[in-house]
Image 1 (cartoon, rainbow, N blue to C red):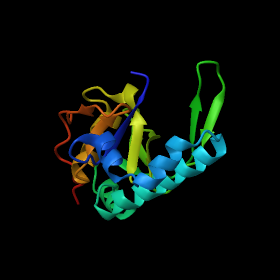
Image 2 (image 1 turned 120 degrees about the vertical axis):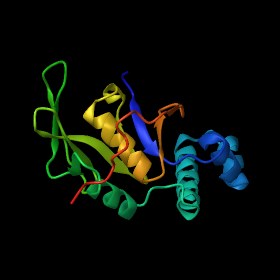
Image 3 (image 1 turned 180 degrees about the vertical axis):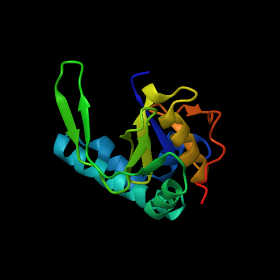
Image 4 (image 1 turned 45 degrees about the horizontal axis):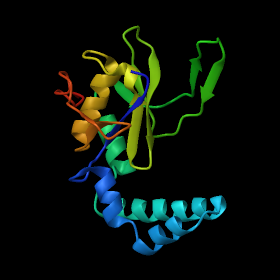
Length: 172
């Protein structure tokens, strides 16, 4: 698996249907009628902002407060404390600045690793981690359960929660 998976809430019928029903007709008509790339970009941004407000208004986005609470209550994870460095197959090192709501997962070797990024009401993690027993997959399932969300692929396909998602509360 070489793509991302997401922790997000899904409207009935999926995002494609929801977006089509909630995109202002006037903006959609303007977008369809123009061939100017810059204008298309501006209209697309207006549509994205409008849809984001609509999603937030009806509870389809995970709030930052909900997310932080879920992370704090989930064992084996914590809010990010350091930036991530990834080594590519060519040996280059890519550095990623963490945001306060990003998540580190306790790896089997005892090190904390940046694993889940939270942006605009949705969290994202690597699909390569999607296998039973993988700490990132277990953490993602626990977070999805705690935030009343689902695990969804890049193309909208839903994934069932893996065994191990139960026990989503830290003891103490």
